[in-house]
Amino acid sequence: MSYISLMHKSAIEQFFQRYLTAFHQQNMSDMQQCYQLPCTLHTPDKVVLIASDKVFEQEFLDIFTVLSHAEIKRFVALKASFSQLSETLILACVDWQFIGPKDEVFTDFSAFYHLALSEGQWRIFNVVSQELSQSVDLKHVFNIIL
Image (tube, rainbow, N blue to C red; front, side, top):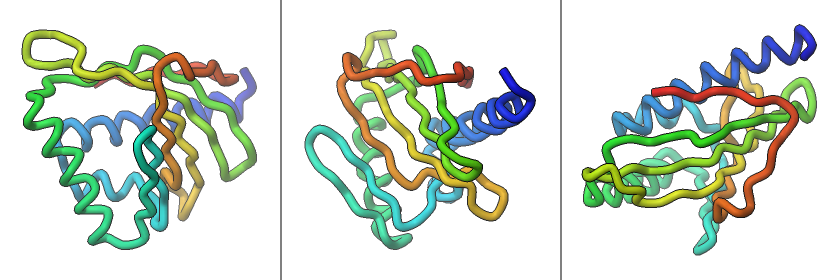
């Protein structure tokens, strides 16, 4: 792996640590720092354009409500990888498991994150969540641990 790729690997690992911590703590402000507005969220059920702080807060409040009702205790990254598309664009793929109160898998899925470097910070501008069977291995493996 080249020096540049190692730098990006470290930055991407740090980014996803911040992201997962904010997600786990349901910290809306820290979550929003991980996103570039406008952004889009794609699930198998719908596509949401988030163009304002208000829409962002409502969308993530909905997500956090579902997770709270399901009593999700932890999030596990089964595997994570990224490819650098340009100096300012990265594609990452993370396979997630959300674990419930009795250590059961509440849900698992593969998420594709499109990140842009903006004002020295990596930020998500698009997320596509798919069934785990859609996972891909990108060029560089990285770790996410909470």
